[in-house]
Image (cartoon, rainbow, N blue to C red):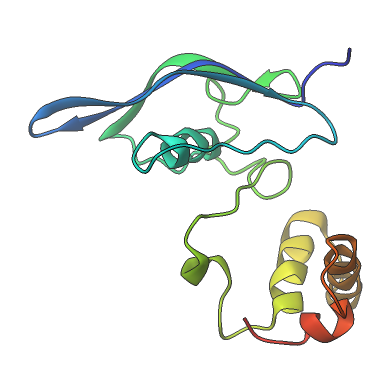
Length: 154
């Protein structure tokens, strides 16, 4: 079997509060392989968002702290290095879809432009090529009438 693209082992994330330390994530481990989709599910407040946000470098430290564990992206420890903090990989190699649908898409930009913007910034696409690729991605995602949807606003 091939090596996982992302390997998270024994992740622990704490938050210092006025009332003491809150253990938000305790001992989370998972692997994600090429072509695989991973769903992290659980009750509200169980640490799903904190787990992924800590991998993305989106937890303010302090008060947050990755207390223990490792996360390897293509074999490189992204928690020990400055890769995430410097945004070297965020958006180009690793990304997340936020839970809140009201903040997922900008209502002032059409859907295609929002997808294209990521391709322009992180992949070096021209504006036209990025928009064309955005339509392809919508089509691959089985969005009906992808070209039409790309020009619509959320």
